[in-house]
Image 1 (tube, helix red, strand yellow):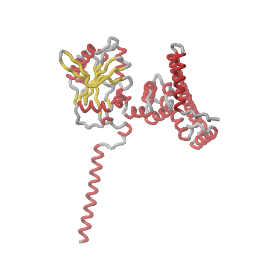
Image 2 (cartoon, one colour):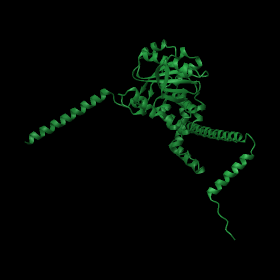
Image 3 (cartoon, one colour):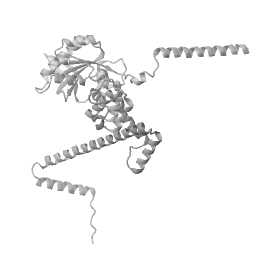
Image 4 (cartoon, helix red, strand yellow):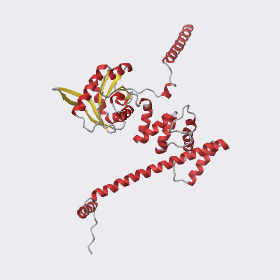
Length: 392
């Protein structure tokens, strides 16, 4: 009897393709769109299931932390009891992770971070009652929550980062980066004239999207650079720059050409913001802000709106990024501008976190320490010289 030839993967794939083509020819019109719709629904359902699982897990950890705190207050539970609790849970559920003694203590700290620490605030915060698990906190993963309670002591600031994480879908690494760059203190701090040049709804959102200063330490540039070098470095690290700009910015181009009145003009960097529905022009200045920069930006925005803006777009916005600025000079310069302009500084080196600043010595302490060390070394050398002379 002749042996049946084994089908190879290539033949199976080819057969599947033939069947797919044959099936496609007999399928009703609109099937392709229908199946894509079903696939999309499945993906959405998968995301919802993942979020639901995460919410249940965070809620469980909250309840365990609450129970530990209550038992400690009523029965004086100590370290050994919590360790035994961890052992018993892991014995009963050997395949479930997350119940080590250390993580049990984290659950306790997690509960206290959103209850006791909130109740200690001098002024109440609407979304924090100090009794229940805040919704935004329950929506983000446990690893994110651990970073929040370990790195941020202020519940208001901590809650702000939890909302931003939920809203922007930050990974844990991005969250840590935003905390270390002190985004909370920088967000919405740029000087602008949006309140007098944009509708209220547009003005509020635009103000919150701009920062001051912008942290560009990822460029690894020295202080002595020109504007073209700064622009080139930003383009080489565009992904990092977009992360620093924030959600919604889409890169359009650099040195974007506009011909106006027979003359050539070039925009340093041009973006489009998906939520504001408008162009955003960024001009780079490696020196201190000057009033004429606002006038030039006003001209660029007028030309951009006339030449490139779609009828459905909102008015274009300008951001002048400069090495330093004088607030009063900027405010006066923007008062006369008829176009929405913001001014912010950029930093090429990151400032130290607040908690480290307090631990470092002041310049005076360093000088005094060096003097003391040099003095002791001098005395030591003198003693050696005297001892050597005595032997002679």
